[in-house]
Amino acid sequence: MGFRWSYYDKIDCSIVDQIKKNRNLPDSFFSFSMNDMPDISLMKDIKKASERIIRAIHRKEKIIIYGHDDVDGITSAYILFDFLEKIGSQNHYYYIPNRLVDNHGMQENFINKVEKENFNLVITVDGGISCSEAIEKLQNLGCDVIVTDHHIVQENKIPQAYAIVNPKQSDCDYPFDMLAGVGVTYFLIRNIAEILNSEIDSNYLFWVAAGTISDKVPLIGVNRIFVKKVINNWFDFDDTTLRKLDKYLWNADNCYKKIKIIRYIIRIFSNGRDLNGKNKGLELLLAPENEKTNIIDQLINMQRKHKENLYKVMEHYDKIKSESFDNHFIFFDNENIIPVELLGYFSTKISKQFQIPTVFLKEKGNIVAGEARCTEGFNLVESFCFCKQYLIQYGGHARAAGFTIKKKNINKFRKKFKEYVEVKKGIIEDNKKIDIDAVFTIDEIDKFDDYMQLDIHNLQPFGQGNPNPKFLLKNFIPKRDSWKIKVMNKDVILKPDESYNIIFSLKGSSFRLIDHRKVNYML
Image 1 (spheres, one colour):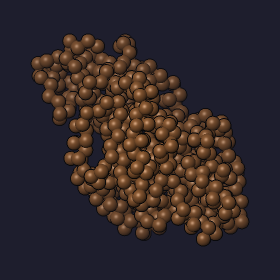
Image 2 (cartoon, rainbow, N blue to C red; image 1 turned 60 degrees about the vertical axis):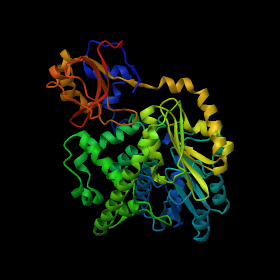
Image 3 (cartoon, rainbow, N blue to C red; image 1 turned 30 degrees about the vertical axis):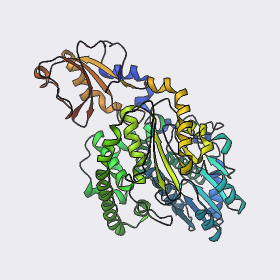
Image 4 (cartoon, rainbow, N blue to C red; image 1 turned 45 degrees about the vertical axis):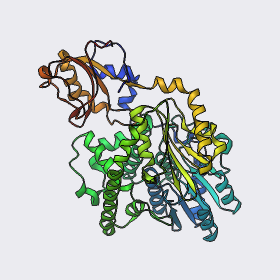
Protein backbone atom coordinates (compact mmCIF):
# COMPACT_ATOMS: atom_id res chain seq x y z
CA MET A 1 0.00 0.00 0.00
CA GLY A 2 2.82 2.41 0.86
CA PHE A 3 0.77 4.85 2.98
CA ARG A 4 2.21 6.51 6.06
CA TRP A 5 0.91 5.47 9.47
CA SER A 6 -0.32 8.50 11.38
CA TYR A 7 -0.93 8.35 15.13
CA TYR A 8 -0.01 9.96 18.42
CA ASP A 9 2.33 8.23 20.84
CA LYS A 10 0.45 5.68 22.84
CA ILE A 11 -1.23 7.02 25.95
CA ASP A 12 -1.57 4.84 29.03
CA CYS A 13 -5.35 4.83 28.99
CA SER A 14 -8.32 2.92 27.63
CA ILE A 15 -9.05 2.36 23.95
CA VAL A 16 -12.06 4.70 23.98
CA ASP A 17 -10.06 7.47 25.71
CA GLN A 18 -7.40 7.18 23.00
CA ILE A 19 -10.08 7.47 20.31
CA LYS A 20 -11.61 10.49 22.05
CA LYS A 21 -8.22 12.20 22.27
CA ASN A 22 -7.12 11.38 18.72
CA ARG A 23 -10.44 12.55 17.25
CA ASN A 24 -10.84 15.53 19.61
CA LEU A 25 -14.31 14.31 20.56
CA PRO A 26 -16.11 16.52 23.10
CA ASP A 27 -18.19 14.95 25.86
CA SER A 28 -21.28 16.24 24.06
CA PHE A 29 -20.50 13.76 21.26
CA PHE A 30 -21.79 11.00 23.56
CA SER A 31 -24.72 12.79 25.20
CA PHE A 32 -26.44 14.94 22.52
CA SER A 33 -30.18 14.42 22.05
CA MET A 34 -32.96 15.90 19.90
CA ASN A 35 -33.41 18.56 22.60
CA ASP A 36 -29.88 19.81 21.90
CA MET A 37 -30.61 20.73 18.27
CA PRO A 38 -29.70 24.33 17.40
CA ASP A 39 -32.62 26.73 16.98
CA ILE A 40 -33.95 26.15 13.45
CA SER A 41 -35.11 29.77 13.23
CA LEU A 42 -31.42 30.60 12.69
CA MET A 43 -31.69 28.99 9.25
CA LYS A 44 -31.80 31.78 6.69
CA ASP A 45 -35.18 32.17 4.91
CA ILE A 46 -36.79 29.24 6.74
CA LYS A 47 -39.59 31.40 8.15
CA LYS A 48 -40.12 33.11 4.79
CA ALA A 49 -40.28 29.73 3.01
CA SER A 50 -42.64 28.28 5.64
CA GLU A 51 -45.07 31.18 5.46
CA ARG A 52 -45.11 31.06 1.63
CA ILE A 53 -45.94 27.33 1.69
CA ILE A 54 -48.70 27.84 4.27
CA ARG A 55 -50.16 30.65 2.15
CA ALA A 56 -50.06 28.43 -0.94
CA ILE A 57 -52.02 25.71 0.88
CA HIS A 58 -54.62 28.14 2.21
CA ARG A 59 -55.11 29.57 -1.29
CA LYS A 60 -55.20 26.08 -2.84
CA GLU A 61 -52.31 27.00 -5.13
CA LYS A 62 -50.72 24.37 -7.34
CA ILE A 63 -47.40 23.18 -5.85
CA ILE A 64 -44.71 20.96 -7.36
CA ILE A 65 -41.74 19.47 -5.49
CA TYR A 66 -38.62 19.23 -7.65
CA GLY A 67 -36.29 16.58 -6.25
CA HIS A 68 -33.14 14.63 -6.95
CA ASP A 69 -32.99 10.96 -7.93
CA ASP A 70 -30.65 9.78 -5.17
CA VAL A 71 -31.97 8.49 -1.83
CA ASP A 72 -31.35 11.83 -0.11
CA GLY A 73 -33.55 13.51 -2.73
CA ILE A 74 -36.21 10.78 -2.66
CA THR A 75 -36.57 10.83 1.13
CA SER A 76 -36.62 14.64 1.08
CA ALA A 77 -39.42 14.67 -1.49
CA TYR A 78 -41.35 12.00 0.42
CA ILE A 79 -41.44 13.65 3.83
CA LEU A 80 -42.36 17.03 2.32
CA PHE A 81 -45.04 15.58 0.01
CA ASP A 82 -46.59 13.49 2.78
CA PHE A 83 -46.48 16.38 5.25
CA LEU A 84 -48.18 18.78 2.81
CA GLU A 85 -50.97 16.25 2.43
CA LYS A 86 -51.32 15.87 6.20
CA ILE A 87 -51.71 19.65 6.70
CA GLY A 88 -54.40 19.96 4.08
CA SER A 89 -52.82 20.46 0.66
CA GLN A 90 -54.83 18.81 -2.12
CA ASN A 91 -52.98 20.26 -5.08
CA HIS A 92 -49.33 19.24 -4.85
CA TYR A 93 -47.20 17.03 -7.12
CA TYR A 94 -43.60 15.93 -7.53
CA TYR A 95 -41.02 15.70 -10.28
CA ILE A 96 -37.83 13.63 -9.91
CA PRO A 97 -35.44 13.93 -12.90
CA ASN A 98 -33.59 10.79 -14.03
CA ARG A 99 -29.84 11.37 -14.18
CA LEU A 100 -29.48 8.61 -16.79
CA VAL A 101 -31.68 10.59 -19.20
CA ASP A 102 -31.75 14.20 -17.99
CA ASN A 103 -28.72 16.45 -17.86
CA HIS A 104 -27.48 17.85 -14.55
CA GLY A 105 -29.66 20.61 -13.14
CA MET A 106 -33.16 21.88 -13.81
CA GLN A 107 -33.89 21.45 -17.53
CA GLU A 108 -36.18 23.14 -20.06
CA ASN A 109 -38.66 20.26 -20.04
CA PHE A 110 -39.43 20.90 -16.37
CA ILE A 111 -39.80 24.65 -16.94
CA ASN A 112 -42.21 23.93 -19.81
CA LYS A 113 -44.21 21.62 -17.56
CA VAL A 114 -44.52 24.31 -14.89
CA GLU A 115 -45.71 26.84 -17.46
CA LYS A 116 -48.09 24.48 -19.28
CA GLU A 117 -49.71 23.11 -16.13
CA ASN A 118 -49.92 26.48 -14.36
CA PHE A 119 -47.98 25.73 -11.18
CA ASN A 120 -47.83 28.57 -8.66
CA LEU A 121 -44.99 27.32 -6.44
CA VAL A 122 -41.92 25.16 -7.02
CA ILE A 123 -40.12 23.75 -3.96
CA THR A 124 -36.75 22.17 -4.67
CA VAL A 125 -35.36 19.53 -2.32
CA ASP A 126 -31.73 18.35 -2.24
CA GLY A 127 -30.88 20.64 -5.14
CA GLY A 128 -31.52 23.88 -6.92
CA ILE A 129 -28.71 26.03 -5.57
CA SER A 130 -26.79 25.80 -8.88
CA CYS A 131 -29.85 26.33 -11.11
CA SER A 132 -29.88 30.13 -11.22
CA GLU A 133 -30.85 30.48 -14.91
CA ALA A 134 -33.72 27.99 -14.71
CA ILE A 135 -35.04 29.53 -11.50
CA GLU A 136 -34.92 32.99 -13.06
CA LYS A 137 -37.07 31.68 -15.92
CA LEU A 138 -39.58 30.20 -13.47
CA GLN A 139 -39.78 33.40 -11.44
CA ASN A 140 -40.33 35.37 -14.66
CA LEU A 141 -43.26 33.07 -15.45
CA GLY A 142 -44.86 34.21 -12.20
CA CYS A 143 -44.11 30.97 -10.37
CA ASP A 144 -42.39 31.43 -7.01
CA VAL A 145 -39.44 29.11 -6.27
CA ILE A 146 -38.32 27.99 -2.82
CA VAL A 147 -34.91 26.32 -2.84
CA THR A 148 -34.02 23.85 -0.10
CA ASP A 149 -30.54 22.47 -0.56
CA HIS A 150 -27.30 21.58 1.19
CA HIS A 151 -24.74 21.70 -1.62
CA ILE A 152 -21.95 24.27 -1.83
CA VAL A 153 -23.16 27.75 -2.73
CA GLN A 154 -21.39 29.43 -5.63
CA GLU A 155 -21.56 33.03 -4.44
CA ASN A 156 -21.53 34.47 -7.96
CA LYS A 157 -24.42 32.22 -9.09
CA ILE A 158 -26.95 32.36 -6.25
CA PRO A 159 -30.46 31.91 -7.69
CA GLN A 160 -32.88 34.82 -7.41
CA ALA A 161 -35.48 32.58 -5.78
CA TYR A 162 -38.33 33.61 -3.49
CA ALA A 163 -36.47 31.95 -0.61
CA ILE A 164 -33.34 29.84 -0.21
CA VAL A 165 -32.99 27.48 2.74
CA ASN A 166 -29.41 26.20 2.68
CA PRO A 167 -27.12 26.28 5.74
CA LYS A 168 -24.07 26.72 3.49
CA GLN A 169 -25.09 30.29 2.61
CA SER A 170 -22.44 32.69 3.93
CA ASP A 171 -25.08 34.79 5.69
CA CYS A 172 -26.91 31.85 7.29
CA ASP A 173 -26.56 31.80 11.09
CA TYR A 174 -27.43 28.13 11.59
CA PRO A 175 -24.31 26.71 13.29
CA PHE A 176 -24.23 23.30 11.55
CA ASP A 177 -23.84 23.42 7.75
CA MET A 178 -23.16 19.74 7.01
CA LEU A 179 -26.79 18.60 6.87
CA ALA A 180 -28.03 16.30 4.14
CA GLY A 181 -30.79 17.60 1.89
CA VAL A 182 -33.34 15.58 3.86
CA GLY A 183 -32.16 17.23 7.08
CA VAL A 184 -32.84 20.69 5.62
CA THR A 185 -36.27 19.52 4.40
CA TYR A 186 -37.08 18.06 7.82
CA PHE A 187 -36.31 21.36 9.51
CA LEU A 188 -38.53 23.20 7.03
CA ILE A 189 -41.36 20.79 7.92
CA ARG A 190 -40.72 21.31 11.63
CA ASN A 191 -40.85 25.07 11.20
CA ILE A 192 -44.16 24.88 9.34
CA ALA A 193 -45.53 22.55 12.03
CA GLU A 194 -44.50 24.99 14.76
CA ILE A 195 -46.26 27.87 13.00
CA LEU A 196 -49.43 25.79 12.52
CA ASN A 197 -49.14 24.09 15.93
CA SER A 198 -49.46 20.71 14.20
CA GLU A 199 -47.81 17.32 14.68
CA ILE A 200 -45.12 15.67 12.56
CA ASP A 201 -45.22 11.95 11.75
CA SER A 202 -42.52 10.41 13.96
CA ASN A 203 -41.73 7.91 11.17
CA TYR A 204 -40.18 10.74 9.12
CA LEU A 205 -37.08 10.47 11.30
CA PHE A 206 -36.30 7.01 9.92
CA TRP A 207 -36.23 8.40 6.39
CA VAL A 208 -34.20 11.41 7.53
CA ALA A 209 -31.59 8.96 8.88
CA ALA A 210 -31.69 6.89 5.66
CA GLY A 211 -31.22 9.97 3.47
CA THR A 212 -28.46 11.27 5.73
CA ILE A 213 -26.52 7.99 5.64
CA SER A 214 -27.02 7.60 1.88
CA ASP A 215 -25.58 11.03 1.11
CA LYS A 216 -22.41 10.34 3.15
CA VAL A 217 -22.54 13.60 5.06
CA PRO A 218 -20.49 13.55 8.29
CA LEU A 219 -22.19 11.56 11.07
CA ILE A 220 -21.39 14.22 13.64
CA GLY A 221 -23.42 17.02 15.22
CA VAL A 222 -27.04 17.20 14.10
CA ASN A 223 -26.62 14.31 11.63
CA ARG A 224 -25.39 12.04 14.42
CA ILE A 225 -28.38 13.03 16.56
CA PHE A 226 -30.78 12.04 13.75
CA VAL A 227 -29.16 8.65 13.17
CA LYS A 228 -28.55 7.88 16.85
CA LYS A 229 -32.20 8.62 17.62
CA VAL A 230 -33.29 6.08 14.99
CA ILE A 231 -30.81 3.43 16.17
CA ASN A 232 -31.80 3.83 19.84
CA ASN A 233 -35.55 3.79 19.08
CA TRP A 234 -35.46 1.20 16.31
CA PHE A 235 -38.54 -0.75 17.30
CA ASP A 236 -40.72 2.35 17.78
CA PHE A 237 -41.04 3.03 14.05
CA ASP A 238 -44.32 1.83 12.57
CA ASP A 239 -44.00 2.83 8.94
CA THR A 240 -46.08 0.86 6.41
CA THR A 241 -43.18 0.70 3.92
CA LEU A 242 -40.88 -0.76 6.59
CA ARG A 243 -43.52 -3.33 7.50
CA LYS A 244 -43.74 -4.44 3.87
CA LEU A 245 -39.94 -4.61 3.61
CA ASP A 246 -39.65 -6.65 6.80
CA LYS A 247 -39.48 -10.06 5.11
CA TYR A 248 -36.37 -8.94 3.20
CA LEU A 249 -34.59 -7.76 6.34
CA TRP A 250 -32.98 -9.53 9.28
CA ASN A 251 -32.77 -9.43 13.04
CA ALA A 252 -31.50 -6.03 14.19
CA ASP A 253 -29.99 -6.76 17.60
CA ASN A 254 -27.06 -4.32 17.44
CA CYS A 255 -26.05 -1.01 15.87
CA TYR A 256 -23.99 -2.62 13.10
CA LYS A 257 -26.95 -4.70 11.89
CA LYS A 258 -29.33 -1.72 12.05
CA ILE A 259 -27.02 0.41 9.92
CA LYS A 260 -26.59 -2.55 7.56
CA ILE A 261 -30.39 -2.76 7.17
CA ILE A 262 -30.60 0.96 6.40
CA ARG A 263 -27.85 0.60 3.80
CA TYR A 264 -29.72 -2.32 2.21
CA ILE A 265 -32.89 -0.21 2.01
CA ILE A 266 -30.81 2.57 0.45
CA ARG A 267 -29.56 0.17 -2.24
CA ILE A 268 -33.13 -0.85 -3.05
CA PHE A 269 -34.33 2.73 -3.35
CA SER A 270 -31.30 3.75 -5.42
CA ASN A 271 -32.62 1.79 -8.40
CA GLY A 272 -36.01 3.46 -8.75
CA ARG A 273 -35.21 5.86 -11.60
CA ASP A 274 -38.07 6.25 -14.07
CA LEU A 275 -39.15 8.62 -16.84
CA ASN A 276 -41.20 11.82 -17.00
CA GLY A 277 -40.44 12.90 -13.44
CA LYS A 278 -41.52 9.65 -11.82
CA ASN A 279 -39.49 7.53 -9.39
CA LYS A 280 -40.25 4.01 -8.16
CA GLY A 281 -38.70 4.62 -4.74
CA LEU A 282 -40.86 7.66 -4.10
CA GLU A 283 -43.84 5.83 -5.59
CA LEU A 284 -43.30 3.07 -3.01
CA LEU A 285 -43.15 5.49 -0.09
CA LEU A 286 -46.35 7.25 -1.17
CA ALA A 287 -48.34 4.18 -2.28
CA PRO A 288 -51.25 2.72 -0.27
CA GLU A 289 -50.20 -0.28 1.82
CA ASN A 290 -51.94 -2.80 -0.42
CA GLU A 291 -49.90 -1.63 -3.45
CA LYS A 292 -46.47 -1.60 -1.83
CA THR A 293 -45.56 -5.28 -2.21
CA ASN A 294 -45.71 -5.16 -5.99
CA ILE A 295 -43.50 -2.04 -6.13
CA ILE A 296 -41.01 -3.60 -3.70
CA ASP A 297 -40.72 -6.64 -5.96
CA GLN A 298 -40.01 -4.34 -8.93
CA LEU A 299 -37.34 -2.43 -7.00
CA ILE A 300 -35.63 -5.60 -5.80
CA ASN A 301 -35.53 -6.95 -9.36
CA MET A 302 -34.00 -3.64 -10.46
CA GLN A 303 -31.43 -3.97 -7.66
CA ARG A 304 -30.50 -7.47 -8.86
CA LYS A 305 -29.98 -6.18 -12.40
CA HIS A 306 -27.84 -3.37 -11.00
CA LYS A 307 -25.64 -5.92 -9.20
CA GLU A 308 -25.31 -7.94 -12.41
CA ASN A 309 -24.20 -4.81 -14.28
CA LEU A 310 -21.70 -4.07 -11.52
CA TYR A 311 -20.16 -7.53 -11.72
CA LYS A 312 -19.86 -7.23 -15.49
CA VAL A 313 -17.73 -4.10 -15.29
CA MET A 314 -15.62 -5.03 -12.25
CA GLU A 315 -13.08 -6.76 -14.52
CA HIS A 316 -12.73 -3.50 -16.41
CA TYR A 317 -12.22 -1.69 -13.11
CA ASP A 318 -9.38 -4.08 -12.22
CA LYS A 319 -7.63 -3.03 -15.43
CA ILE A 320 -8.15 0.65 -14.61
CA LYS A 321 -6.71 0.40 -11.11
CA SER A 322 -3.63 -1.41 -12.43
CA GLU A 323 -2.61 1.79 -14.23
CA SER A 324 0.05 3.99 -12.67
CA PHE A 325 -1.27 7.00 -10.77
CA ASP A 326 0.41 10.27 -9.92
CA ASN A 327 -1.39 12.78 -7.71
CA HIS A 328 -4.75 12.64 -9.56
CA PHE A 329 -6.61 10.49 -12.09
CA ILE A 330 -9.01 11.37 -14.91
CA PHE A 331 -10.62 8.52 -16.84
CA PHE A 332 -12.76 8.89 -19.98
CA ASP A 333 -14.81 5.79 -20.77
CA ASN A 334 -14.41 5.90 -24.55
CA GLU A 335 -15.13 2.14 -24.77
CA ASN A 336 -18.63 2.73 -23.33
CA ILE A 337 -18.26 0.01 -20.70
CA ILE A 338 -19.18 1.78 -17.44
CA PRO A 339 -22.86 2.75 -17.06
CA VAL A 340 -23.43 6.42 -16.20
CA GLU A 341 -24.89 5.50 -12.81
CA LEU A 342 -21.62 3.77 -11.84
CA LEU A 343 -19.27 6.67 -12.61
CA GLY A 344 -19.45 7.92 -9.03
CA TYR A 345 -19.01 4.40 -7.65
CA PHE A 346 -15.77 3.78 -9.56
CA SER A 347 -14.51 7.28 -8.90
CA THR A 348 -15.00 6.64 -5.19
CA LYS A 349 -13.14 3.32 -5.31
CA ILE A 350 -10.08 4.79 -7.04
CA SER A 351 -10.04 7.87 -4.82
CA LYS A 352 -10.26 5.80 -1.63
CA GLN A 353 -7.70 3.20 -2.65
CA PHE A 354 -5.06 5.65 -3.88
CA GLN A 355 -6.05 8.75 -1.84
CA ILE A 356 -6.13 11.07 -4.87
CA PRO A 357 -8.72 13.30 -6.62
CA THR A 358 -10.44 11.18 -9.27
CA VAL A 359 -12.72 12.07 -12.18
CA PHE A 360 -14.67 9.59 -14.34
CA LEU A 361 -16.12 10.85 -17.63
CA LYS A 362 -18.61 9.36 -20.05
CA GLU A 363 -20.57 10.56 -23.07
CA LYS A 364 -24.23 11.10 -22.34
CA GLY A 365 -26.21 12.18 -25.38
CA ASN A 366 -24.53 15.16 -26.97
CA ILE A 367 -22.50 16.08 -23.86
CA VAL A 368 -20.12 14.38 -21.42
CA ALA A 369 -21.02 13.74 -17.77
CA GLY A 370 -18.33 13.79 -15.09
CA GLU A 371 -18.39 12.39 -11.55
CA ALA A 372 -15.53 13.21 -9.17
CA ARG A 373 -14.42 12.17 -5.70
CA CYS A 374 -11.46 13.17 -3.55
CA THR A 375 -9.91 12.96 -0.09
CA GLU A 376 -9.87 15.36 2.86
CA GLY A 377 -8.44 18.81 2.18
CA PHE A 378 -9.08 18.92 -1.57
CA ASN A 379 -12.19 20.83 -2.68
CA LEU A 380 -13.73 19.59 -5.93
CA VAL A 381 -16.19 22.45 -6.31
CA GLU A 382 -13.31 24.92 -6.01
CA SER A 383 -11.36 22.93 -8.59
CA PHE A 384 -14.32 23.02 -11.00
CA CYS A 385 -14.68 26.76 -10.43
CA PHE A 386 -11.01 27.04 -11.49
CA CYS A 387 -11.91 25.10 -14.68
CA LYS A 388 -15.37 26.66 -15.20
CA GLN A 389 -14.53 28.20 -18.58
CA TYR A 390 -14.61 24.68 -20.06
CA LEU A 391 -17.65 23.34 -18.13
CA ILE A 392 -21.33 23.61 -18.93
CA GLN A 393 -22.48 23.25 -15.34
CA TYR A 394 -21.08 21.94 -12.06
CA GLY A 395 -22.00 21.54 -8.40
CA GLY A 396 -21.99 19.27 -5.38
CA HIS A 397 -19.89 18.88 -2.25
CA ALA A 398 -16.23 19.48 -1.52
CA ARG A 399 -15.40 15.76 -1.77
CA ALA A 400 -18.15 14.51 -4.12
CA ALA A 401 -19.22 16.60 -7.09
CA GLY A 402 -20.24 16.40 -10.73
CA PHE A 403 -20.32 18.41 -13.91
CA THR A 404 -21.19 18.39 -17.60
CA ILE A 405 -18.82 19.33 -20.40
CA LYS A 406 -18.64 19.34 -24.18
CA LYS A 407 -16.46 16.55 -25.55
CA LYS A 408 -14.25 18.99 -27.46
CA ASN A 409 -13.26 20.64 -24.14
CA ILE A 410 -12.13 17.51 -22.29
CA ASN A 411 -8.39 17.90 -23.03
CA LYS A 412 -8.54 21.58 -22.04
CA PHE A 413 -10.27 20.57 -18.81
CA ARG A 414 -7.59 17.92 -18.14
CA LYS A 415 -4.84 20.52 -18.49
CA LYS A 416 -6.61 23.10 -16.33
CA PHE A 417 -7.54 20.56 -13.65
CA LYS A 418 -3.92 19.40 -13.51
CA GLU A 419 -2.86 23.01 -12.89
CA TYR A 420 -5.16 23.15 -9.87
CA VAL A 421 -3.93 19.78 -8.62
CA GLU A 422 -0.31 20.96 -8.80
CA VAL A 423 -1.18 23.90 -6.54
CA LYS A 424 -2.78 21.47 -4.04
CA LYS A 425 -0.13 18.76 -4.40
CA GLY A 426 1.10 19.18 -0.83
CA ILE A 427 -2.40 18.66 0.57
CA ILE A 428 -2.89 15.53 -1.54
CA GLU A 429 0.43 14.03 -0.44
CA ASP A 430 -0.29 14.83 3.22
CA ASN A 431 -3.48 12.78 3.00
CA LYS A 432 -1.80 9.63 1.70
CA LYS A 433 -1.80 8.14 5.16
CA ILE A 434 -3.68 5.81 7.48
CA ASP A 435 -5.02 7.59 10.56
CA ILE A 436 -4.80 5.28 13.57
CA ASP A 437 -7.27 5.85 16.41
CA ALA A 438 -5.80 3.67 19.18
CA VAL A 439 -2.67 1.67 19.90
CA PHE A 440 -2.16 -1.38 22.10
CA THR A 441 0.11 -4.41 22.34
CA ILE A 442 -0.89 -8.05 22.28
CA ASP A 443 -0.26 -8.11 26.03
CA GLU A 444 -2.93 -5.44 26.47
CA ILE A 445 -5.67 -7.32 24.65
CA ASP A 446 -7.93 -6.88 27.69
CA LYS A 447 -8.14 -3.17 26.82
CA PHE A 448 -9.64 -4.06 23.47
CA ASP A 449 -12.01 -6.55 25.12
CA ASP A 450 -13.27 -3.77 27.41
CA TYR A 451 -13.80 -1.51 24.40
CA MET A 452 -15.81 -4.20 22.60
CA GLN A 453 -18.00 -4.90 25.63
CA LEU A 454 -18.46 -1.41 27.08
CA ASP A 455 -17.60 1.43 24.74
CA ILE A 456 -18.20 0.61 21.07
CA HIS A 457 -21.95 1.27 21.29
CA ASN A 458 -21.39 4.83 22.55
CA LEU A 459 -19.12 5.62 19.59
CA GLN A 460 -21.52 4.25 16.99
CA PRO A 461 -22.96 4.80 14.46
CA PHE A 462 -19.89 4.87 12.26
CA GLY A 463 -19.85 6.53 8.87
CA GLN A 464 -18.53 9.57 7.04
CA GLY A 465 -16.98 11.98 9.56
CA ASN A 466 -17.05 9.32 12.28
CA PRO A 467 -15.32 6.39 10.56
CA ASN A 468 -14.94 2.89 11.87
CA PRO A 469 -11.87 3.16 14.16
CA LYS A 470 -8.52 1.80 13.00
CA PHE A 471 -6.37 0.06 15.62
CA LEU A 472 -2.63 -0.49 15.71
CA LEU A 473 -1.75 -3.79 17.38
CA LYS A 474 1.93 -4.20 18.20
CA ASN A 475 3.96 -7.41 18.48
CA PHE A 476 1.40 -9.71 16.88
CA ILE A 477 2.71 -13.21 16.04
CA PRO A 478 0.04 -15.13 14.10
CA LYS A 479 0.93 -18.60 15.38
CA ARG A 480 1.07 -17.44 18.98
CA ASP A 481 -1.73 -14.86 19.06
CA SER A 482 -4.43 -15.81 16.55
CA TRP A 483 -6.48 -17.46 19.27
CA LYS A 484 -6.67 -14.07 21.02
CA ILE A 485 -7.67 -12.06 17.94
CA LYS A 486 -8.15 -13.50 14.48
CA VAL A 487 -7.43 -10.81 11.87
CA MET A 488 -8.43 -11.67 8.32
CA ASN A 489 -7.43 -10.46 4.85
CA LYS A 490 -7.76 -12.90 1.97
CA ASP A 491 -5.10 -11.06 -0.06
CA VAL A 492 -2.41 -11.06 2.67
CA ILE A 493 -0.65 -14.02 4.21
CA LEU A 494 1.30 -13.34 7.41
CA LYS A 495 4.11 -15.74 8.21
CA PRO A 496 3.08 -17.69 11.31
CA ASP A 497 6.29 -17.18 13.31
CA GLU A 498 7.07 -13.58 12.31
CA SER A 499 6.30 -10.66 14.61
CA TYR A 500 4.21 -7.86 13.09
CA ASN A 501 2.70 -4.51 13.86
CA ILE A 502 -0.72 -4.57 12.21
CA ILE A 503 -3.52 -2.10 11.55
CA PHE A 504 -7.02 -3.52 11.61
CA SER A 505 -10.65 -2.44 11.91
CA LEU A 506 -13.81 -4.17 13.04
CA LYS A 507 -16.48 -5.07 10.48
CA GLY A 508 -19.47 -6.70 12.13
CA SER A 509 -17.95 -9.46 14.22
CA SER A 510 -14.83 -9.83 12.04
CA PHE A 511 -11.43 -8.17 12.33
CA ARG A 512 -10.20 -6.88 8.97
CA LEU A 513 -6.49 -6.42 8.30
CA ILE A 514 -5.76 -3.05 6.67
CA ASP A 515 -1.95 -2.89 6.66
CA HIS A 516 1.04 -4.53 8.33
CA ARG A 517 4.75 -4.06 8.94
CA LYS A 518 7.34 -6.29 10.52
CA VAL A 519 8.23 -5.16 14.03
CA ASN A 520 11.61 -3.86 12.95
CA TYR A 521 9.81 -1.27 10.82
CA MET A 522 10.58 2.17 12.26
CA LEU A 523 7.30 3.56 13.64
